[in-house]
Length: 487
Image (cartoon, rainbow, N blue to C red):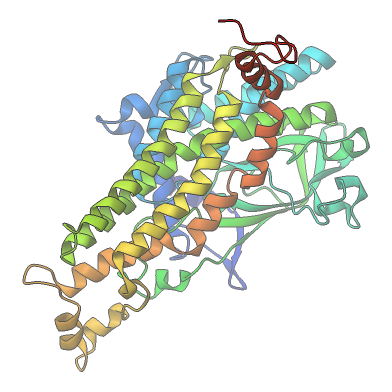
């Protein structure tokens, strides 16, 4: 298992083609827009070597019996799923942001079971290929970027009916030694600092869209793979200073990118689905359940930081004892724990798939993510309420070096003899960072929008069973008109 430092150094050997602000990035490690996200991902490596958290962050491979990083582990028990959630909360509390590696983790878990089921039906050898790939990923402790979200084009049309056939990733050529894929995956978290991509279909597919039913693994620096790093709100602060960016070391959210596959060759040993459309929807649903489980863990860890920052600022500003402030802080903590409890519940209420993989309760997993999308913005709203208007009007950190105004900034932003202006602004910037547009949008649409969870909930809820409960209590079908209920 790599350490965080070894992970960062391993990225130097990659020749990934990355673009940002119109220019090619020569070194993602040394680029100020990307380094905070790399630091956040490195935490997933360091946790496995931390004596306090190693029990959560390490696991034993059921394939080799060797110790591995839990981020590459296939959960086999209820305990595995629970430890996954607890690990996510720890990492979220350390970084205060997204640490990126869970998409690849959930892709590994999902494909392990799905490839076995495809083989059972079609007599293919996907599971054998995938198992070999998984062992390699575990042994080398590789970070995988899960690539699922397509450009989609006109959402009312299926992939094969789009005006441009490349708006969903597809197979454009089948060769004796492999396939060639073309298309793009958007909003890919941690893409620029991943060792490899695990490509999967992003929705259920009809037989007419067989070319789009493709799952495969591609090195991040394979020929034809092009990454376009996305901008974030206030991202220029990353290279303008230290205080104004709020979370200097770990940044904000996950550093998303567009991943372009410009006729990329994939050898057959790295192809895990190719045309089996009837399994595409199942793969997506299964992946979504695992990934929606995560949000009650990682986001509650993030909110631990935000609750702490808001509480600290309330003390700095002399309002911590006010009844309404205590009430709002309590509500922030309550919503955070509610999110976390949802992630734990879907883990405890798990089942076991045919291949031995532990599977979260999908109804509860989708409920957990829906709660997170609803509660996370509410917690940020309460943080802004408590912090006050200065959150949006703080002067630049450069004013501390401006001889004309620095004394005034220090004087008027101080709230007491033991609270310096710089300390107050540092905490304020962290709250600003965590409650701005980027985290809210990511929390809303990461792992699927709230409507996606509602669609699953509508499908999974046993409406007739619940109706029967009510009808039994009131005696529907048992008591005739005008007849009195029997005592």
